[in-house]
Image 1 (cartoon, one colour):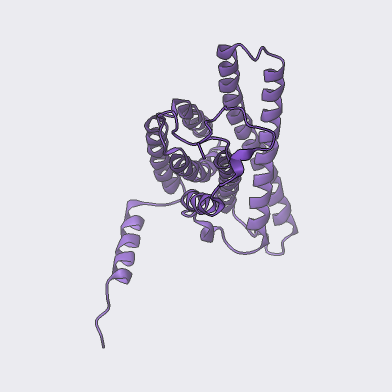
Image 2: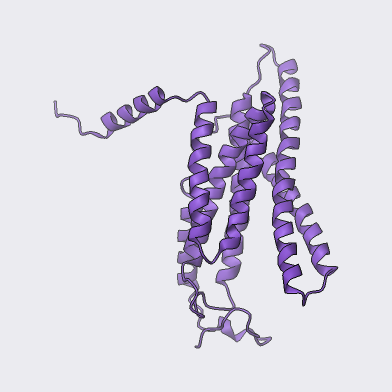
Length: 276
């Protein structure tokens, strides 16, 4: 069966499904999902109901921000001339940038909601302490933001994998699915680190930290317009991820001494023990 290029007219019967290796497709998508979500450190969120509630609510807030930004972009596209390619590209760029700003606005609204929730929990508790700290909330909220973003990215990958079309048939890179998986992974980590930085900036009224998160988010999202030159999007994103990781680690109370002790402990545990 000849491959069907993207954008080709497909018959109503969608004959391109005949001969589709569903097993290979499932294995490929499973490998991409492992790359994208496998390294996410879910085991450090703490115990109890509170982290689960924070995670779920933050994911819901991300969904609402996506719905609103998609609705505005859809209305703008329908109200414009579809034959005007420069205008359509400009609307796409506007949609991405507006979505980023709306996500960060909803992150701030969620922080305000959690702050009110902590005050209520402290008032109701017998010992006057909250069952979850603001640092834990920042981390869990960032993971929730990232996981929901990653889930939608993987769904889009699955939709593209189903066709119609064959990746690279016109001489483009055949690494679309692999690079998309690595991009999804870096976005999940970035959202986690951005949550810590954003909440710390709100807690200490360091507005430049909040501005730094927004700028990094805009840069990472804007770099995806370099695709299919994937180096132009992956390299800046991973560099920013490393910067955000170190920054979030220091703000969370980490230090070089603590990191050295951790590495020494991990090395001693990995080394074989002499037989007694």
